Length: 513
Ligand code: LFR
Image 1: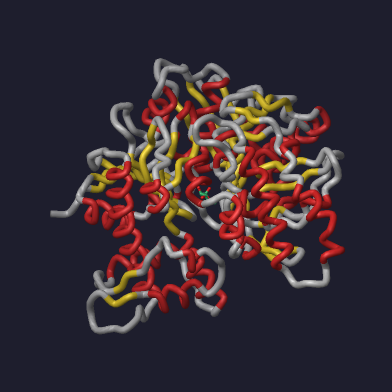
Image 2: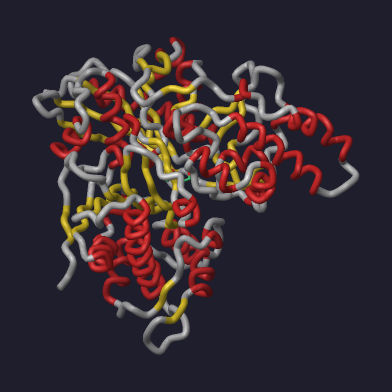
């Protein structure tokens, strides 16, 4: 019988859920997931910016935790023993000294960061930024969001910035912390050690000054306070103390514990960047660098390494070095993933068609391939809206008679073949930069690992085995860190992955002859 139950709050860009994780102890622990609650997460315009509905998410998380506690008790357990939280990266809330949120949690796909990376680069060069942090300079990095954030200069003293999972932990416990895997996604954490790069904190504020100066004239007076605070640099007090995955953030506030019927259980820092949790749950055995794709809204493809690669070649190739658990680094490239498909489906639905993913994938498998290509790393696909139109316009003809994809099935086929082709080139690039041979297998984890057509196309493109699963990698990684912190998984390297391997079914795709 399971000896332990934990709750994993797992927030994705299109849906969130609270999972009950059961941990069965043994020589190798086994992890089992049960969905306590699933809810949609939608982007909407608020206060003039594309934002997340954080209040709705918080409401759903509370319902989910209540349900997780009840599920655990139905299984004869006393309840949940801890809570862990992970979510997409880079986005943050501003919280006043009184604990109240100041304004919306603006989404990373909002256009406020357009051109901001260039402004920041005038203060600290792109080369220097990468040498310091190892983080790829994507327009949405927290650093650039802060440089574009006109609210900072108006914050009362004692205000803090909390990344999305840290905000949820704060709402649960009243404790303000910054978990390091997600902190690394800000583009402000050093690669050499998990500490803030003070030079960049200053640049975040400096970029904002430059943005003010570049803005329409005549409002200099109104911008005065922001500019003044800006020139003093980003107050390091804005950032809450760092914690490592597995550390205890605090315990659930008494009133909330009563409201949710869950007891004053600890909130344990998970690898709170969802991709860090997902890669932790890659079911690989220990030897050699692990090659993976965390496949969801994004496809994050790369290698797990024990040290970052901060060379100019890595920067020019668009690779990043994100911090993982136990001193690991995810040397990877962000490739637009199933976002291209889900956003196309949204367009077709807006246009009145009824489209459903599984049917669409079956149709895409049936149409002839080798017709069209796009570049899924092209920043033009970042913003939401009319995605099918944009993909159609970008599609390059590589075979056949048609000048553009004529059906949803053709379009999806084009997207999937382009993804597989991009996986091939990016994995080769990763291996070249890391001076590693191409590995024997590529692990695909996350929701996208269910896509059999894409898995086969990937195996064919790379000529290596593709191991698909687990689909629930983010939640499993979240549960594994909690289980280890609670002593139910040992501290030996690889023990968490071993528990994952013992707990999941995998599917292997071999290259067709
Ligand atoms: C995946 C992910 C990626 C990050 C992107 C934006 O969900 O967390 O790792 O680059 O979303 O936060």
